[in-house]
Structures are given as structure tokens and as C-alpha cells.
Length: 536
Image 1: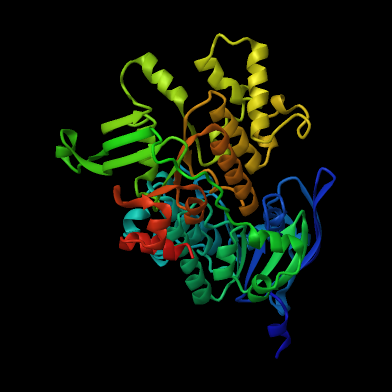
Image 2: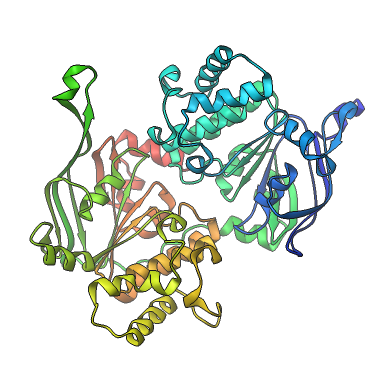
């Protein structure tokens, strides 16, 4: 074997990353060979994303030490020693990166085609016409239908899976030798996740590039990677092939990660429990403009939810599962009275639209926990203001001392207190981890003592151990308070752990429903079988 074949494409030795004198990555070593797929795995805060960003000089304010030697034997360079101008030439051309959240990584004021063309013009020196055509071809390579039309779309006009594909097209524009993929499937549903995984695998083979996959999703690692490097608190604690790590993990942290799956711990349903939620014939329609002059006077309709019936008894969990665009979140918004709908929705016997005061009382009975706590919690409000906001609306007569006491009680109930977090009430959301922010969001919902919680993807943005902790917290609260949960998710494992009954949605229609064990063990509908197979 030649020396060129033996040398790695990227060799990292003694990498240390510090912020303000505090070291967060502690002298790690790893390497990636040409055409190899390496997974960096660990919980939030383990240092895996900072490691990748530091290789390209993108970790703002970081002090970086060590070596990161990249390239073939004849043109090897130390990325950490390069001046900014040379490093800028490597970014996007030789090493590209797919960022975690495409909605924030893509520019909202430019079309997808324009953003891909910009990379080609800057890096490859193509003419505007050549860039536009190449952008369409790249979009087609990623499997997006009608690439010429989609090239003219803005990020908000694409689904989550399409935005992620557009990010992949942009990253691959210059045929890089190494691709850094930072959580490329986070918050995507199981079937779209599998499609993105298959797409990356196919493109990796087609272009012969190496890939460093940064993720906390162990199923993703098992299906995609050749080797695994497990990170904990800034250290690489284990490195081996995928088969070796999953069959015989050596480090206790790796063993804990592999065993961190949602555990079912729910109360058995009562046969005569009253209904917390009853929905009949719920239909949600969005107007779609017609082309031409007729569009000034008439419009078409897009049916997001079609004639849906659901029942949710008190103290139980109804899981609603389906792909992105299946209508599950739209159904939740209709139940919450936040979307115009036809049909009827009754919460503890009361429907929407009785009067302003009646609707306000109903909102106290039913609260919501959103998918991304970083987006749903105001960055300008303290924890005390965020959690206590509901009391200001629904129990305005409370004194400041009583309100603060209730806020502390709600936070303690979700596992946050002043002993762990000195000055807790005056902190802001950015000072907490993802799991801690989700606990704050749950405390905000609980403080008005609701009977029904709508949980919209409550764990999709969290790593496996944090997700497990949040699910255990929700199960505990349901047992103690008798809460009913309407659980919206694409994660089949979460449904198995939490739900008593499940509703499967596709294209705005309920295609299957029943007890969770019956539906998942003996699925009748083909779409349900596809969802379950994709989750394996």
C-alpha cells in the first residue's frame, strides 16, 4: 500500500479549545481517511460541534491549540495554523459543512437557487448563467422534485426535509473532499430522516468524499458510519468501528448512551374516565391563490386536516404520529383554538367561541409545550417572568410574593431550584441547556394548573439522555396530577413509551387509530407499516 493511501485525509492531534480561559475540548485525537464516514457522538455540551467548528476557524472567540493536518501527502496543511485568507479558500471548496438548523443557516431573503449559485460564483468563478444551471442540477441531485421551480423558492416555502436537502446541495456545490454534517436530521420525521441518510450515503459514494457526522442519534450512527468516536465533556472516551461499539461498548458512558431509550412507565387507563378532549369532524383549510386574473377573485383550497375525530380521556395520552406535512401540528393548533376550523372541539365539555371570558378560562384548562424551547421562550424575559406570565393573565389578583412562591413551586416540580442554579429566577433562557429550557417551558405550562397539555414534539431537539429525562418528568407529572396529554411527534419510540392510544396521520387524514400496542404490533394500514419500518 502506498504512503498516500496510508495517510489520513484529516489527522487531528492534541486538539484543545478554550473560551475565556475555560477549556471545553481537552486534547483529543482522531483521524478520517478519504471516503470514510466517521461519527462524532455525544450529548449536548460534549464538545462535538465545537470540535468541528474549530477545524474551520468558525468557533467564534475560541482559543484553539493542537494540530489538524488536512490534505494529500503532497499538499498537506495544518488547518489550525493557516491565516484567515487561506482558510477561507478551503471552506466550502475542500471542506464543507451542513449546519444543524437549515431555517437559521439559510438566508430568508434569497431564493435557494441564488444561495447555491453564490457559492459556485465565489468558489468556482462560473458565470451567472452557468451558476443558475449548476444550482438546478445540484438541487436535482438531492432528490427535490421540480428543481427548476424549487430553485426560485425561498427557505420558508420549503418543508424541513427540502430545506435540509438544499443545505446539502449548497455544501456539495464544489465537490468537497470532506463534509462536516452537524446533526443533519435533527427534528425531521422518521421517513424524511431515512431519505436524508440514504441521500448522504449515495452522494458520499458518488463523489468519494469523507464525512464526519456529528450527532446524538445512535440509530443514525448504526446505519451510516464506518467508525465512531464517542465524546463526553470534551474528551473522546472511546473510538472503534460501528460494529465493535454497538456489540461490545467498553466505556460506561458509551454503554449508558446505547441504553438510553424511552422507557414506558404510564398508569393504566380507567375504563370510565371522562373525556378531557373530544373533537368531531375537525377540518382545516388554507386558501391557495390561483394563477392569472382569476386569482384576483377566486382561490383554490388546500385541505390540511380533513374531517378528523379524536377522543382523549382524562389522565391518558393520545399520540399523534405522522410525517412532516401530515397535519398533526395543524390538528393540535385547531384543538388549541389557534386556527380557524370547521367541526367541533370540546375540552372538558366546553367548546371554543362561547365568549371572550369563556375562551380565556378554557385556555387556562389547556396549555401547550412547544418543540423548540429556545424559540418559544422569550430571550428578553427572566425565568421568573416567563414562568409567571400565565398567572398575570389568569390570576391577576395574586400578590407579587404569592406569585413568586408559585413560580418557585412550579420550577421545583420540574427539577429546577435555587440550590442547583443560584439566582435561578433572574436568569435568562440562553443560560440553560436544551433540556433545562424544556423544563422551564413545562413549568410555564403547569403553573396555571391545566387539565390537558398539548405536547408538540417535546423531545425532538434534545439528545437521547435529556429526552429520556423529559419523558420521565412528563410521566411523573401525569401520574401525580392526572394530566391528559395530546402528544404530537414523529418519534415512534416516544409514542411507545408515553401513549395509551395512537392516531396515525397522512396527508391530513387519520389513516389508523387504536390502542398503541395494537396499532404498532398489528398495523393495518400500509403507511403505518412504512413508519414503523423507518424507525427500526
